[in-house]
Image (cartoon, rainbow, N blue to C red; front, side, top):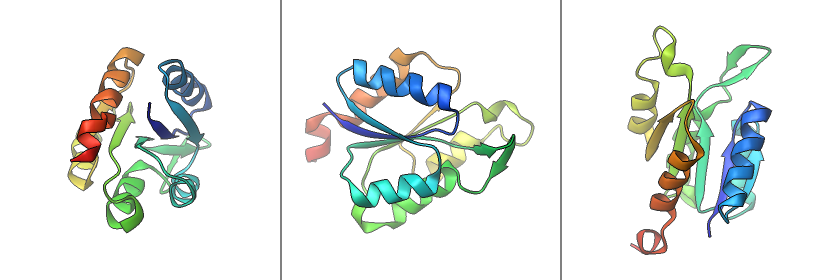
Length: 136
């Protein structure tokens, strides 16, 4: 199965997603910021990155989020081709309706709106981590 890095600032959501990925047979590690995820991506090999789009500290969005992380991955030779799924509930806020489109334009492969069912995420994980897809 796949080795997956999850960047999610909400610990409850992150632990639930990590559990779901492990129960589906994957290896998963969670980070809570883009800077932590970057360090991990440079240290270890991963088959997939799942990233929250917006990271909040004390209820406020901070620049250390998923949009910047996606851009960094696509500019960094070591991880440039890493498949990326972005997840967010932010699209419901005024001015954020197109945030998943923006993430895809920057380089995310898939965008998923929160809340979502584990089955939906796992189906996308399977598509992006299939051995025959990675080999091409």
